Length: 581
Image (cartoon, rainbow, N blue to C red; front, top):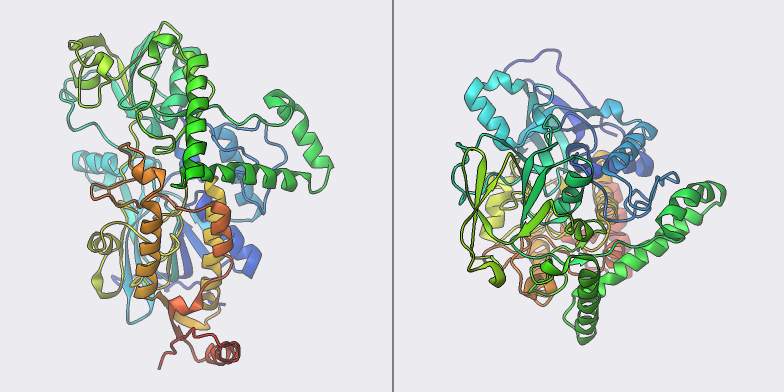
């Protein structure tokens, strides 16, 4: 196995070498590190994490009400189950503690370097290595968005943000930075930001120092985060009045009820899971199958359309039974179920009955010192389209308006063979795309987790991550064992895979359901959704298709290659591998 090395002293060209570098210490990075140790006994890797703590999205998202909308028994690693979840849908804080317990169990703490921002990765054709530029941050600066860090640097200079920089080299590079990293900023069509005297922050960068008691709060957005935040503003944070601005009504699904109910589950499940061997794994599989079966709603077949029609009727009944009548029109979506990500929630609809809360589809037009001006806009519901401009008192604005999704891996720059960046290749090919969501031709020894078209949006992200890790580790193993020096996806495999994905997506509800969502680019390219069942993805990731890869074998690995070639000839396989001269 390859081992890390460090030069005696740092000159202008000094660098540290690690056999493998992982970017990100969230669920993806932690999962990859655990499986490297568990499956192939390899621990000579290094993890760079930009934020000041371990946990990825669960470290940075601290807004009131933050929780998982997938049952925790399924939103956790299959290889490290937790029998002690306090509820079926635990809080974000509890999920963060789970991640930290995984790090401790697998002894990863000394492998993780926090406050480290990887800004540039360049493939070195001569050395068959990745050259990585790391900027070490002033502690806490990594918890800010890239735009916030840039603004601070412009205002106070680089020393206010960065401590030092470093060059690192590695043979294998894995990106686990996630897809939703950079919060969307202030809406460009809303004037008066500089005049506003109150606090403005994004839900993903919650400002815990702001006191909401007795304040007039404006919430921009009605996605999953907003649905969790709004009820808590009233019940826990003591807001005087909350106005929620909605562009399009979401489909709201009542959360899955656990066996014995939420209270019974919390009381009895931990004790039973600790007592009965294998029961937790069995229940996990049942939950996984039940959740994955909802994939049938999203297809183009007649049975899928019938299922969606029935689901639509059920969800409208749920709306009418739980939300105030005055909002029924506003909250009835005008697009197909599943076109956008559904909200799994039980608190938001009932909270709309609180007289301190107002929901509107009027758009935010401008802000002044202590007021916000709302006015009809392109997305305003017909029932409000003829209303006059409305001025409301406003002390605090919470942006729950999503993330920057214009480019994947943003703001990280990854440059492969011939000096082409990932985003330049994406642009040439019509949109972000990666083979099985993890690899792209021209970027050797590079693997991504959370890459384009990785997840269906209806199941557990953790299942998808474990699928990708299972697939990638089999390709990474011979690199770390020094049997091969380089593995590069074939262009025809990349193009063929993406063609199949986009063709399958054309008639899926995400592409044809009549909504505008971040799933689709302006040219209709869907780089987000995986168009099949996640359990099917598990099957397709069990073993790599070696004939899809160009491989440069080392002298050590050639005997193994010859042996494998013999097996392929004996079985009639046409797969080929390329040896280095």
